[in-house]
Image 1 (cartoon, protein in one colour):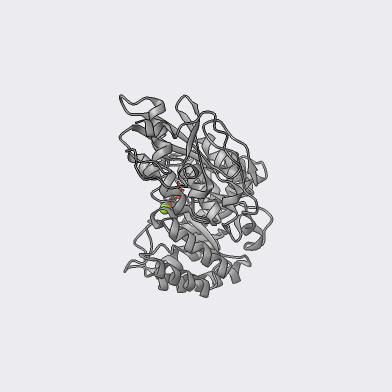
Image 2 (cartoon, rainbow, N blue to C red; image 1 turned 90 degrees about the vertical axis):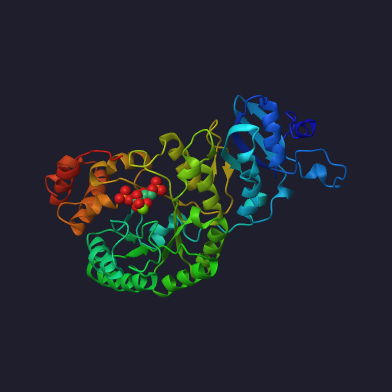
Length: 431
Ligand code: CAP
Ligand code: MG
């Protein structure tokens, strides 16, 4: 036991290049808080369960110290030397590894980590980030709008491109997004979908005079195939691709970001599977910290929730997360976010999606604003009583009403697509 307590030092002052983690720790029955935090610091750095005869010369240089404990919230400082330069997997296999399975803790949550510039400097960050609005869509302000074909599976590649995507683009939406579980199924082959989407994108651009793009899902069985799919999208002149970042893993995200830099492309990061470990407030890892890692590696826009839509998301955390993704420096928010300096890593966009429709978009804009976000409205576009193009127009009208400070009901008096959307959904918040 005593060997664990060597990893607790309430007098320790973190060094400039230390990685400082904020954990929420709930000891198991019969384990004191001090013993629990000692095991967290030990097992996530260089400790083990037994004393050792043989010890390395560097032993004291590779130890983490739990240095601050305020009720169930604990800060642990990790020496920079124990994390491989430029590697998020290398970081997470320590601070996100074995400690979550230790019997000594009943619950454990990694709330945030302050990453030193000495670690950040090895990452490229996003190619565009928030500049995508100007550089890709040639507009001063957002939101960037997107629609997912619904139902999420079942369309053939031709139906996807001709019946849905073309109507969405004609209705004024910027991007058509693949759903998280659409990849390369027999009924909608990836290459055919890319080819047909590019054909109808060109048609829609010509007819609308506006830039159109797509978030096509490159989530793949392996890295070789991932690279091949990104190349295919690039060869069809799309600026974006989409990756399911959690199911793909940090190495795939890193590979995708290298390729995005090679091809000057933007990455739409879908976070499917994140709720498996972010939803329980007592255990797992915060979405805020996951989104920090994605900004660091180089994802241009990251799903961060809606607060009011069908999927979980707490408003305080979402606002803290959006700020951390958009600013070059943020302060600590007690037990929610640590301070963070970003150096030259670009600010990136939050994506608000999930159960949204024209009647409740103003509630999203009250939280996110309208300039620096990506808005995704799937069912809330295609469920429109007058079809997909009308649904797209209703979404655009809802955005315009908000920007002009006009109530939806008033704006709907002169905009029939919005009227019809409000007739169907009103202002209900789906769950
Ligand atoms: C939304 C969505 C997105 C979720 C992801 C879906 O569709 O396509 O995947 O928004 O959740 O499959 O539910 P709707 P989050 O617009 O029809 O709801 O953004 O929280 O990661
Ligand atoms: Mg989806």
